[in-house]
Length: 360
Image (tube, rainbow, N blue to C red; front, top):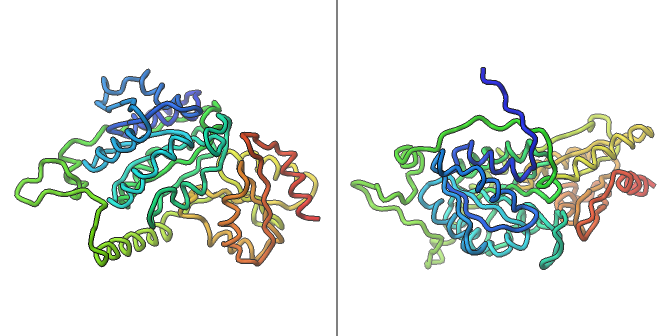
């Protein structure tokens, strides 16, 4: 058995290392704080000399997402990364790829907004990603890491899910996870697929090597309303299948809990510390951490609502995921929200006080 490779690095750096190791064919991006280390690390590692992976700094976020569109249409494992304002610029291209049913990976290391906002951490892109920031009825498979290890692990998982369902996938991180340093076990090295493997695994792709058959055309355009409705109904059936099969979450001390903290990403780590502090005072608190923000763990939250008194949703925003929690609870119990804005990250004491206030 090969010895595990344990290294100390930032979350952004882990994304870059994992991309190379999982056989990524191409990265197209543009620097923006707090995720610039993804591109910078790839530039230092020079994977084009070792694996043949393309790494290109595009002239803009609009250009980078359209480069991803082109690579994905060829069946390649391609990705981009950015932060909140940059991802806003990508929304048209993301919608196009969802409509063309193309797999890709988009990493968003969130910063505060709206507008240019701040370079400090935020979780205020939940609506943009989970609800679909572009036009049309589409969904994005969305994973929310809460550690540097998960930043590394979720690259390969995101590609797997994206290709399994022919759908864009997003790693929705925040500036805390992108910039923090932790020990991480890097994933095993997986070679890039050969052209023959791409053709065999992606018969829908436009590869230029479609002998004796009609060439594939990659497009999201359909001028006939009836045909477009058929396309959309097919998309909705696919999304339902994803919701049935790909929900991921973590439950912490929920078995005897009377109150639940719901938090994702970096706030789940802070929420867990608050949970421990509340338990020391005899208050039975558990925590649910959604790992997939879409598909959302609606059924799990609904079941918890049958046996707990209330829930506190903790986010670095004005209240976004809390809407989905309230929909899942469906009025069974009170659901309160606690969040900080402007890039301010709450500390455990603030969450403890918010929980006590809710209990009163």
